[in-house]
Structures are given as C-alpha cells and as structure tokens.
Image 1: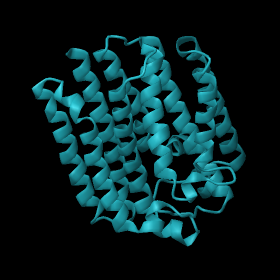
Image 2: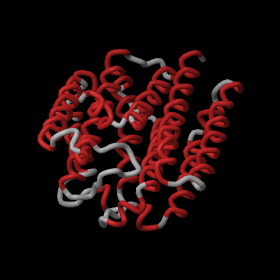
Image 3: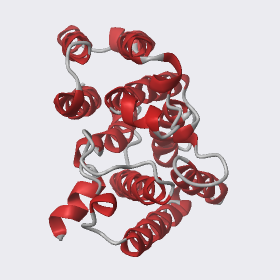
Image 4: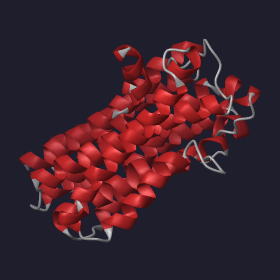
Length: 289
C-alpha cells in the first residue's frame, strides 16, 4: 500500500518543486539575507503543494476517463485499482490543507498579502487537473508550470527572507520555470498517443511531438541565457555549472528524439534532476562566494 502512495507522489518530478526554492536561497546567500526558518517552510510548502497537485491529477484524470490501465507512464494507482478514488480525493485535499497551513505560517515573515497569494497557489494546484477548464487538458500545462514552479516559488521564497524584489531573481524564476516546463514536455511527449485518443489537448497533441521536442531544447538554452548576467558575476570556475547543464540537457534531448513509450520514463527523471542540480550548485556557489 505504501508503495502505491509513493508512486502516486511521482518522486521523479518532485525535484521540480524543490529547484525553485533552492534557486531563491542562492540569491538570499548572495544578498546576505538568508533566513533558515522561512527558507525551510518555503521548501516544505512547495513540496506539499506539488504532491497535492499530483494526487489531484491522478484523481481527476481517472474521474474524467482520461487514464487507461497499462499506460507507458508511471503507474496510476487509482486507475489500476491499487488506491480507491475516495482515498485519493481525501489525500489530495488533506495534503493541500497541510500545504496551506504551512503557507499561512509564512505570513509572519512576509505579511498578510501572502494570504491571497496562497489562495491563488492552492487554486492553481487544483486548476491544473480540475475545474471547468483544466489547464493540463487545454495546452496550458507548461504555462502553469512556468508560473507555479518557476516565477512564484523563486520570487516569493526570496521575498519572505529579504522583504524586497530583485530583477535578477525574476530572470532566474523564469529560467527555473522553463526548466520545469521541460519535465512536463517529456511527460506529454511520452503520452501523446494516449492523450490524443481521449481528447486531452496537451501541447504535444496540438503541435506534435517534433515541435515540443524542439521546444524542450529551446527552453534549456533560454533558461541558461536568462542567468548569463548572474553567472558572469560569479567565480570563473562556477561557469562550468551552466555548461554542464547544457551538455546534459542536449544529451537528454537527443535521447528524447529516439526513444518511445516507457523508455522515455528515465528522461523525465533526468530532466528534473538536471534542473535540481543546476539550482543546488548555484546555491552552493552563492553560499561559498
């Protein structure tokens, strides 16, 4: 039973939510305003919000008949009969409530305006798969990732520790968002045939596999370019970090174009881990400068 819940959390994708928070830590280190308590709270909030969104995606896709047994992607516990729909629904909203509780604790550090922002984030976590216009079914999944796993977590994590906004942080947040969107691109590239058969209009279905594969490559290079100014201010040895990211990114893209079906699953995890490693090494470099 525990195994099925761990699968439903989609561990391969969780580095996406952590990367944005860790990226912001790097800027807090650079500007000497890192605060451990809100930093950890932001990390926990991001993790819980993504898990609740993953649970919601599994529950609402099942309810809408968009999943089938034996799919190429990660095992869907509800569809396969491992988890009851009621249990998944309770886990979805229970995890979301816990995320909201953690988020409310950040009001102490960032002010009451974080409350409506938290509501927007909670609604966004559900709107990806639920509601009258689920974003994931109308070609807006990657846009949602850009905002909710890039711009919002990076800028807000930085703000609650510094109480200021920073243009370089904004550029970095878009960078992280583009990297996160690539994780979803791999997912939707793999699921193209299944999604098309049930009328789920992802970007891969709308524009085709080749187009989104090229978008994957483009996103990675633009993501690094957006932070070129920041890297230029850091030690020369640290420039190896964006270079190595682009090498790994290009290698994954090459494999994306030649693999099919379940053989694409490892690329999803690789994309997420490359993103997390990029953020982590940026933060480490910032801390030791």
